[in-house]
Image 1 (cartoon, rainbow, N blue to C red):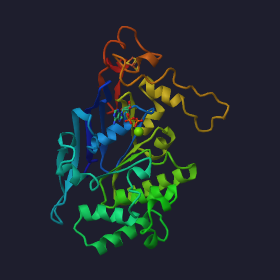
Image 2 (cartoon, rainbow, N blue to C red):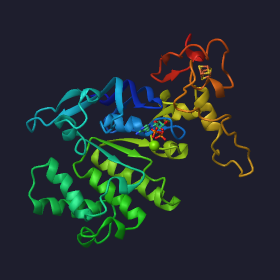
Image 3 (cartoon, rainbow, N blue to C red):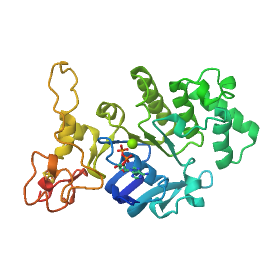
Image 4 (spheres, rainbow, N blue to C red):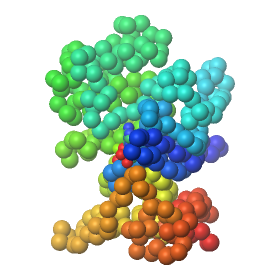
Length: 343
Ligand SMILES: Nc1ncnc2c1ncn2[C@@H]1O[C@H](COP(=O)(O)OP(=O)(O)O)[C@@H](O)[C@H]1O
Ligand code: SF4
Ligand SMILES: [Mg+2]
């Protein structure tokens, strides 16, 4: 039997913004991987580099920002002759020039993104039908009529009622939840092997959030695509994801299977994050521990371990001096903390 197949490997990714005021090291060491059809959650406080990581994968970082180091290995499945086994080629997305033909062929077709705010992806001056059809006409050899039919079908699939007529409406005529669905339909039009969803439910009410997440899970099962779900909500991660990467100040400080991470968080930042969310069944009066201190200014990353000013277990003379190594545990989990360096 075939083992699980890798889809994406991010290794030592660094993405900086070079501003007059200084250099923002938005991503300063991201390491994780994702299996074909798998679901990875990326979590961490606001400003820790989740969105910049997603934009790096899709080569959407704009000047004065750029990827300065690392690899983003995408295992592309090539359409072989029918009947013969599929072959894959490995492309380092980090090496593709932003705006190059190669990345434009992949983005929107094999890797698609949905955003927190649908209006980032949808144009206000075109109907949703025209926008979704444009994606498929760009990437697939189909007639306009076929593109329209497939769009109606996809809108129906994502739960937009009366999709034949909704096709001709403008985004502002739809509710927030429906706009989110239209954006998901647009992202899924080319049946991508990877969907990156950046806080896709944050702007929605709780009921709508649950519906959208359920919809994404259902479509993922049907289409066999992998998902990277970016969120600051650990509850969502527990419910939806199989693996999780925890980010702090641009670094992936821990990467593990979801069960292992929740049962036995290794990194002090992960431990603090878990203490700061309500536990299932915990009374509302139960005390939560907010993480002490503030996220430091991105221009002034602390030296050594970036978490050391806030870490209860910091070892003076060590954590404030040396950058902790990336430790790979026997079970495959990774953690970036000196407490595990010698084990
Ligand atoms: N276009 C940009 N120019 C300069 N700095 C940026 C830009 N985009 C993001 N950053 C900085 O990079 C860091 C990471 O941002 P981001 O990835 O958006 O965080 P998150 O998505 O985790 O909230 C932040 O300090 C942010 O201010
Ligand atoms: S390296 Fe030191 S400061 Fe950083 S998380 Fe580990 S113990 Fe805390
Ligand atoms: Mg973000």
